[in-house]
Structures are given as C-alpha cells and as structure tokens.
Length: 298
Image 1 (cartoon, helix red, strand yellow):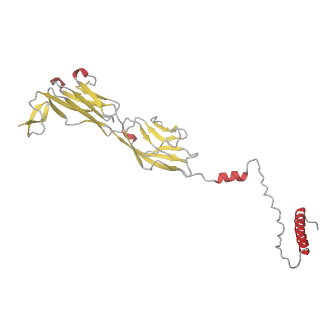
Image 2 (tube, helix red, strand yellow):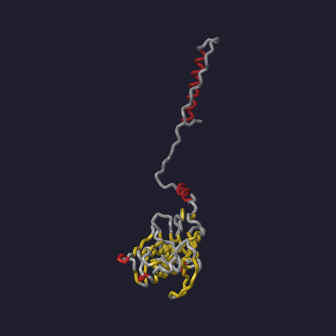
Image 3 (cartoon, one colour):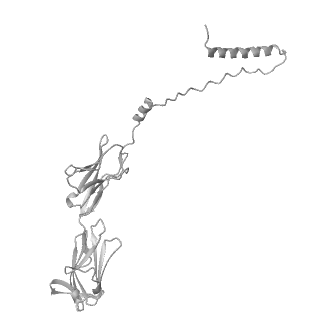
C-alpha cells in the first residue's frame, strides 16, 4: 500500500536518524561512553491556514442580531413634582437613557388625553409641545400660559417592549404681591416714605413692577423724589419717596407683570399721631375714612 507523501517523508526522516545512530555506535569502543545524541527534532507543524472571506458572514450577522441592547431607563425620578405659577411656562422633564428606536409619548392622566407622540402634538390645545434637541436624551413637555386646570399627573411613556412610564406631578400656584407691613401706614410730613413689595408663591422673577399712587403710575416721577428699585433676585421691589407731603397721602399699589397686585393706604400727617418705637403706647380710635388703630406716646 502506497503511503501518502507526508507520511513517507516522516518515515524517511525517522529511518535516517536511526541509521546515523547505529553507525555511530559501531565505530565506538566498548569502554567508551558518550552521551547518546537525541533523535533529530521533527519539523515544526505548519501554521494553520486562515481563510479570510471578504464578504458578509452570516454567523457574524446572526451574532450581532442576538446581542441584547442595554435596557431603557429613566434618568428623571418617578413621581417628581414640578411647580409653576399661573401665566408662566411649565417645563415637565423626562430624560430617557438607551431609548434606541423607542418613541416618547406624553399623556395627561386625569382624562387620558394623548398630548404628544415624538415631536408631534396630538392635542388641539396648542399650549402643549414636546421639546427635544437632536441627539439629546431629554423629552420635556412644555405647557405655555399655565392655568390652574393644568395641574395634575402627566405620564411620560416609552414605546419599548413592554412599554414603560414615569409620572410627573405638575402643581400650579398663583403668585401674589404683598406690601410689607400693615394695610394702613402713618408717617410724619417731611419724612421718607418707603414701601416694599414682595412676591409670594412665585416660581420665577418678575420682569417689572409698576407702582401706582391713586391709580397713577409714578415709577418715573423723579421730580417729586420718587425712586423705584428691585433686588438682585427680582422678587422684591422698593418704592421710596423722600420728604413726603400731605399730597402723598392715598392708596399705593404695586403691580408685578407676573403676580396679583397688592395695595396699602398711606397717611401723611403733621406729626400729632406718629409712632415712636420704644415708648409706652395707648390706643385710641379715630375716624379717618374708616376706623383705624392709632398709637401715640403718653
């Protein structure tokens, strides 16, 4: 039987090694002891043949398809609370990680009204809009000109399998202005009138505050000693009138652009009924358009 060429070659190498070893042994004296030479090392095995196929490999495609995508999860905490004041713009957040091909929908839970799907608004109320920057993970629901009826739960839903959602509670408050101090104020003629108007329950600063004296706007009456200023946070406005006169008596109102107005009544007197802190007081009642409490020193 004829051996394959590879086996024939291996057999010849083995026989040659044995023959060389035998001849060496015949030429040696019996008393001589030399180290026995090892057999010739076999040829190294040929490297494996790697076949590179420059085409789509179905196995690889199948492997890619079987890799599970990372799970969808919300970076926005469930049951978060967003507070907005009436007339402002409410931003209801929904940040979704690993959305993939999923689509975000916003649903108003109290009536299960579908508001938006993706960037498309399905509500007839144009105040609702989904706000999303390309490649971002933020899908914010924008509600313009917020009203009290907009308060309630809003559902941010991802069209994953199965669908997953979080709920955001939108709370609506009505911002109000408040003039610090009693409803009626008394000061001595020639003294400085100072009124402070503070926003209450406000979620955003005012743009401006108009001050009125007896229904007349006085913000720019610098010639009569009027000065109006606002603090850095724009949540408080101060009216100052230097050297107040009897003509400065009357009703004063502060009217912010984003809050309900507030009013107070100022009496500029000639000094007979004036508060002086730190002195013992007694109370009398006098008629001054209406009954008011007046304190004076004994």
